[in-house]
Length: 296
Ligand code: R5P
Image (cartoon, rainbow, N blue to C red; front, side):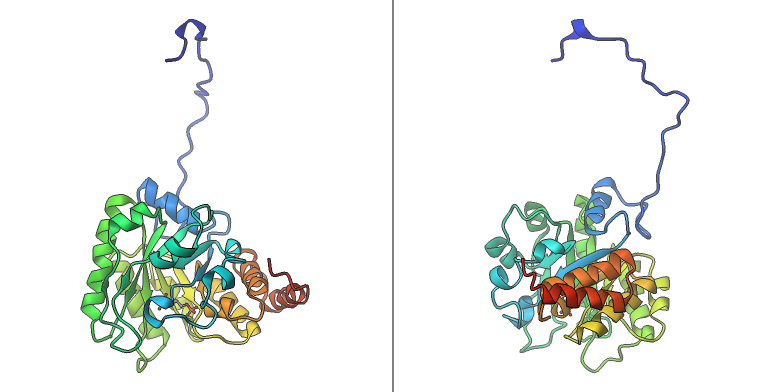
């Protein structure tokens, strides 16, 4: 109980200064609740409005992927340079120190392996786990046009409902079947369906032609997926084009952790995403850092 004898008459009302009511910086997110916005503001940098997510969740359907054989040794030395780590609860609990300061995006769909039909996923992690693990978003795979399209969409809407209850955003990850066309038309369809059904942000692949129409027609932020490893200059160009054409950042895995110098690549990607650095300049940065052999 404060000592009421020492109370001074308060005079700092600033009656002439109206209280500011600011809009939230992130596309399509202004009507969300405080906790949801707070989590999104940890994933997306409020200054640049963008994020560099590091995806290391591949093991949930394909086991020890090249570059992720030992997350403690392969990833932890540079994980601090990502804005967000996207991973499974198994790796989170077994490897990531609870003192790790960056926001976590938790993979919550699963139930299939590369040996079977990948679209046959279910919700594999309950909402209580996401709360218990203090995550900033939950990632669900959505297979538009896939064999289990409806089930995967409903997995997402269930997580959106549960996440809305507790203030945890849902990231819809658009997955493309092997035989499906990866073009803007498909990604406009897939991302828009995810957003219409409540996803708070959507991860999708980059396409050379008309990617800006994918971003423009999706009412919530888009983050670009990296895909299979390509040469560093090409990956930097792809990330540059994606953000210049409207993406709110990247969620990349193999193009970072399979790079010859993951830390240099992560820093070069950061320059492209947060500082609008050109791919050429970012590649110079990559080479400089790589040659300095900065690995910690
Ligand atoms: C999608 O299936 C998963 O989230 C992947 O583990 C992740 O998106 C892959 O990242 P990348 O394609 O950049 O290696």
